[in-house]
Length: 338
Image 1 (cartoon, rainbow, N blue to C red):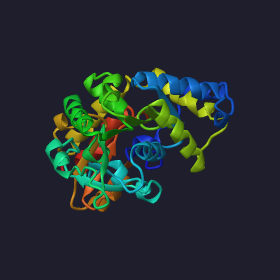
Image 2 (image 1 turned 60 degrees about the vertical axis):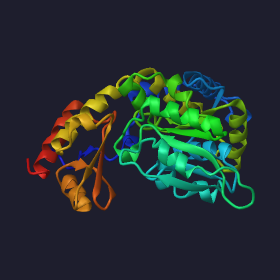
Image 3 (image 1 turned 120 degrees about the horizontal axis):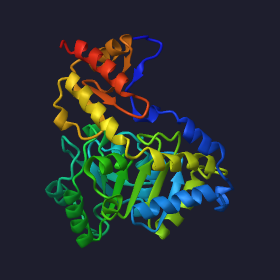
């Protein structure tokens, strides 16, 4: 395997636009989106809002910004959001929710990133006047990145939604890879959307668009987020060029996620992980020498990530073919002494 052409399994953000996507982007009709006049962006926002059964949506350059705006729409400064301890909003957004949103965060821990309703209900803090931080929202992540692309069962999300509704607590869904959950389980996107007041979705991971995420929620939440997006310096002008890539991804790249899931299971088996434990496109393996393992794989033409001192992550995506997967599996089998 040529080392100058490695198989890159570090992240599904590494995809490159296909020829068809590039053509769609090049021919996109555009306008000034800060004025609300980009027709391609507007059409995509309406389409995605409808897919998830919500009133409106807002295109953002990144998933982290979509999450920041979404949580901000539910939690005012001085209130708290509850989430799982390895959630993306807690671990991988550089403290943005505290730094820019003024919110605090408490966490429960689950090895598969799942909803633990008894733990969440035990953590819940009602409004008790000027003494304690009030719980304003619960955030869940589906699929859960650092839990190995785990899917959150719809029944668990429905139970959480019922419980929060009884208390006047909101739900945020980080759906960066909700498309993977949809394909893996057959659950309609609208069914997932019904479990959240506001959610974020991403086009630049498994769907293969070069840029773009979206906040989805009520018309009021989106109107507020549009102002906050501009305040944070993320108002965009002729961004229909990017929205066209996302729209092409929705048309052509959703169902093919099943290929990524199959490829992930092949890699899991090569790493000694039960393929049945891999629900989508992420494989997490424990190694006492994560950094050394990453280096050894790189020397053999396979790029993987250390996401902790003893944790390695592999992610399949549009840019990894079946042949690539089989060659990477051979390398991984060797590294695991198979």
